[in-house]
Image (cartoon, rainbow, N blue to C red; front, top):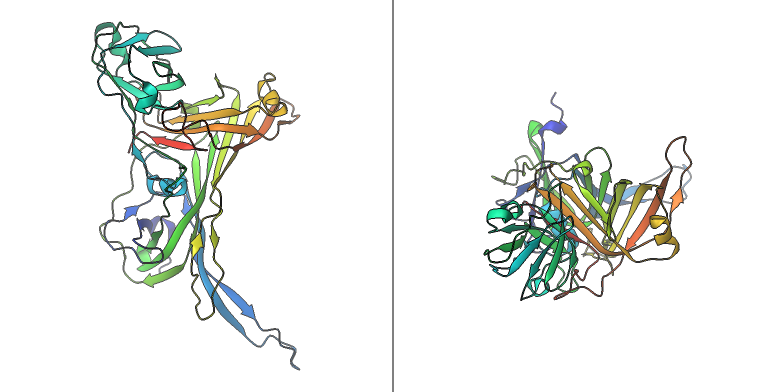
Length: 406
């Protein structure tokens, strides 16, 4: 007897052309996973008749739906499709300054890049972006192809810190240089939200069984970033129906990306205007409030799956109680921000995922009382940065994600 094994299970997905319509068999993307527990559920109705034999006489099936969670280790590029669908905006190529000959580099940290004319804000750069420069010569060559994180931004001055131990090398203007936001970015937009749905297949190769979950929408994601260990992602799914078969439905799917897995120990975390080394863990959640519509008479299929009226970004930081800064940010209801870069190593141009919450407030600062170092737990809520947007130094959003590998 052959029993299906996890090692022989394959998970793939493809965007649907219309919600609830099985996606085409070609062009699917395979996913890496820790687990995928998607399953077809049904409402059930049990008879409540009062009869002399005093036993349940019948039970019937009702409306169907797909529920479950895709869990994985957080890896740049791997979860591009679910992430952009949760943020409800496709990833777009990062902006660049085009070639400039009027930029002076001043050593730091923090270092600065100052242009004599033009505007970094008009170009579209934002605080929190990870950028790389090219074109520097002689004493400025060390500025090329290094990851720099923007910490302060005006029209003419870009203040940066290196994402490793590197600093800005001083160089007078005159070189033809270009700054580029690495990879692609997505964020929860103000308008023109996407409403993606997917067909997700579980293929059990050892027993030749396919389960195709149709009309699946991603309702949110939970990111767990421990101080030691690998970062993880959990993506919640709600779908309409399941189709089964005895052959793999997705033919010649694209292999899952093989990029490295992020570990928070290789990253940087900035709260407000300070890079912190006292944070012992961070969790971030995006919840779209996904709900199934009410059933209709005459059909056992959901007529729709809808996004809620707001996307909520919440999370928690845990940090050593080193001083009053984080505690007082809670007490005084201070508006802060959060930027987390999860790098794939310590190289100056290491791949990364970069998560920026431009505006947040803490909702607590409870401290424990262990036998060792005292920690405080700081839940927070991300808020829309109404001061951000085109021509400003931040995005008009509650959260943005930058992926260097796509």
